[in-house]
Image 1 (cartoon, rainbow, N blue to C red):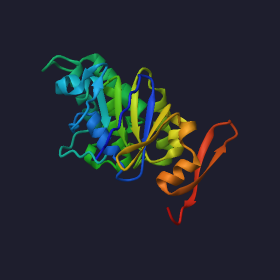
Image 2: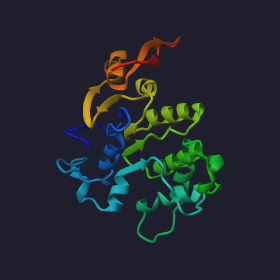
Image 3: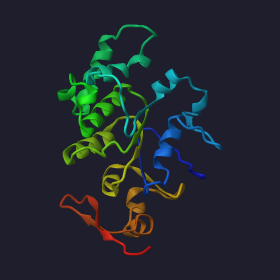
Length: 242
């Protein structure tokens, strides 16, 4: 349950949404996608209420990678990504050369070209997330919602993914994640939820402090700096009592 959570995000920004389990992160993602209807307030995209948009128009505006998405069909990854292009063309029109080119670009960006001919239901958790990311990228929307997309990825692909998200031109990204270090390094803004409320919001360097991690997450942490001067958050332990 969310209460009085309000946010605005310009294109070209990456908003990291963090919080303990049950804080409302996935609920927020579903509200932003129109999968849940808020009792009060509304979601607006470029000034237009999301609820007034058709499903086709929504898919032209906003793409998503959600947790635990299942498919009952043995589509290949390439077929799955190509389906994302349907809203870009007239109903019942055949895929165009641009559609196929967009698929290849998306597969390459998500490091999923090696998965292209494999059935989706034969992939590992991390591989499936890369396929779903490619599908979202192929939609070429100005808004992107990511619900813990790195949860099953290995360390290399987590870093590749984070760098990709940060570099998307002209896209507003809402990225729900658990890793405060990734948020500190790759997000332009952060929103921390606690018990369905906004605990704090702002610039990652200002918001993601050891004190915040202690009060909201119950862990001890240190801010460190690597040789390049980049800031990191290192979780060092668990508080015995809160």
